[in-house]
Length: 251
Image (cartoon, rainbow, N blue to C red; front, side, top):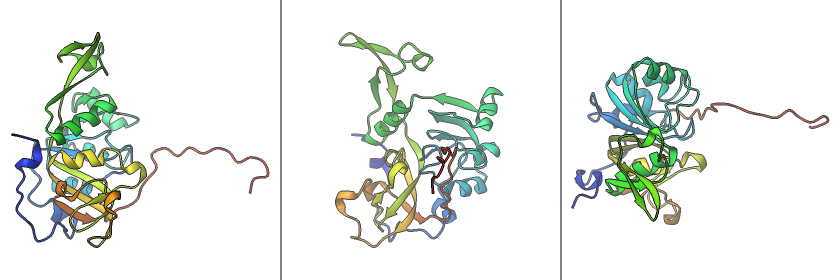
């Protein structure tokens, strides 16, 4: 029985999952027209080191599944700038003017999802569930062309799974087996995307020894991880900084 991308992966034991660089970790993986899942929410949890290497590779015609498409000059925005992305499957266009202009001009295809629906479609892809029903989007453009059924007097739209040729993920810590721990808001789309790619490449801020991670603190088991690099970029930019004025006399 097909239980999703993982049962079709080559399960031969590798000497190591650790690669020396983003370039090495993506070698032999990228091809034109592929589908890539990219973790992150806004600029939190973006695979900052892997995206520049995808840009440098020149691969094109990409379908990218991500909550959003980065911000000016950062993240997936850089792949929009080079016109390497042909289609975005996402939930938040936000204030990305390049994203907006390419979509409105017809350069970029967009499949817009409610945010929770996007997350569940990705989770379903990793779990081997081809379709599910949700009330979110019923009666809106989101439901156009999709089957709608009634359960217990309420209408639900049928959504389908999302899977990818490659998932690129940003984690806080990993051990050599690929067990992952995410930090705070970076634990957004990254864990579910790690399960839904035929190949999952992870960049981590800290690589620890085997056995150093508390088993109860692991967010993603290593069975879902194929390749690991230590991040070369950890800028963690803030998309929009909002502060409040100091009160008079404050230190």
